[in-house]
Structure formats: structure tokens, C-alpha cells
Image (cartoon, rainbow, N blue to C red; front, side):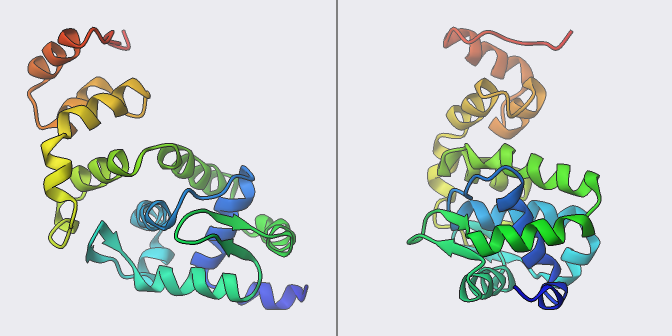
Length: 195
């Protein structure tokens, strides 16, 4: 593989390779991919400048992110299986190994944390979290009403998976904290106060 070529990959392409390389697991699907890149770009100035996100069928979406993924696939660095899993190829692993040193350890840890946070959520849990924390990105959503109808259930599920604190889960559910706690008690779910 031509190492000089790798230096010319866009920041998003390099980040995608890192997301796939760091824990050797695939990204669950294109919806997860879009949301992982969205959350990373919110805190990464260069990616924020490189990508434009807009409200779409399933919340924040970037056509630039789609193009970056497609280019990586055309180069044989990643493989997209249907509309589902996104995997790194052997060539992609070789590229990622080379590119890894261009990232700080804190950036690599951040990318891994975002992926671990989102990748084991169901699609509806993912959308509930993203919709409730980025309401400006829901105007075109085809799932917003479905998410809102079961918001308390999704919030409780995120809380049980230890993805959200008690306070954040209550906020996502749109219930007052005391009402959220009552809902947990009704469902015999233990409450962790962190004290």
C-alpha cells in the first residue's frame, strides 16, 4: 500500500479507519456510522469544518460522511455489507496501523468511547438518545413519533445498560426526576445513585 496516498485521506476517512481498527469490531450499520461521526464532529473542529450535517430521515446525516465511506470502500479499505455492518479490510488494517500515530491517544480513546457507547444500542435506543440530545436534527425524521411514543421505555433501557446516569435518563425520558424514579420502582429496576 502506498503510504503517501494515506496521508492524503480526509480527516473523516482516517477517523473511520480508527473507529474500525481500535477495537477490531465492525460498526453496526450506516445509521450508527452517521451518529458516531456526528458526535465526534461536534467536538472535533477539523471534522466539523469538513462535514455538514442536516436533519434527515433518521436524524443528523452528512452526505460528506456517506462519500467518505464510499471512497474508503472503493479503495478496498472498508467493506459495507448490505446496509448493515461496516468492517475494516486487511488493507484497511494496514492503513490504520500506519495512520494511528497521527492521532493523539486522547483522540483515539474518544473515538473508541463513542463507538462503544453507541454500537451496542438498538436502532430505536440510538435514535431516542440522538433525537433527545439534538432536537434541531429531528425535523425530517420518519421515526420521531415512534421514538416519542416509547421514550420512557428507551430511556429506562439506556439507564439499565448503564449508558446514562439517572438524571440524564430522566431528562431523555422528558419526565421529572421523581416521576422517572417512580417509573423505575414500578418496573422493579434498582436505582443507582452513585453515592
